[in-house]
Image (cartoon, rainbow, N blue to C red):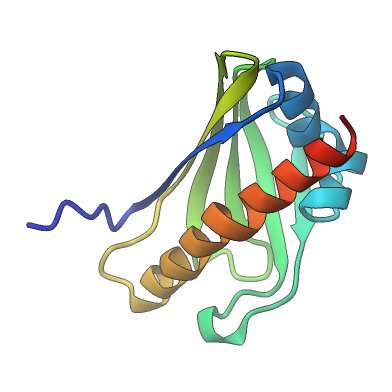
Amino acid sequence: MTGTDLTTIHVDQFLAHPPPRVWRALVDPELLAVWFMPTDFAPVVGHRFTFRAKPLEATRFSGVVAGEVLAVEPERLLRYTWTDAERPDGLNSTVTWTLEPEGRGTRLFLEHSGFDPDDPIQQLSRSIMGGGWRSHVMRSLDRYLSRVA
């Protein structure tokens, strides 16, 4: 057994910015559009929203993520669903952001769960998205936060 969780992506990132600043970047739709993706997000449980990205043929991703906010604990926890808006029979997953104060900064944990370990397309998605969350998304968030400091 390798210990690899085929159902979930885990990311742990330290950001040299206080939790209120990180939180705002995660929930403000205008800020999300700058560093992440265009969206009509609102940090309200039950709110339905979309993220818009480039389609990815290899994983059959349409480029439109449909989500619903499941949990909001300001400056601490944000959880929402993540589903392909044009392929509801595909990946049906959950993204959870957890913020923990650490010194003068924030330890940011991301968990993206719900990948089917027996579905090769979902495992390809997990692999691609895992790299994207770890490198592109976290770097983009940190660059954005550093610019607005």
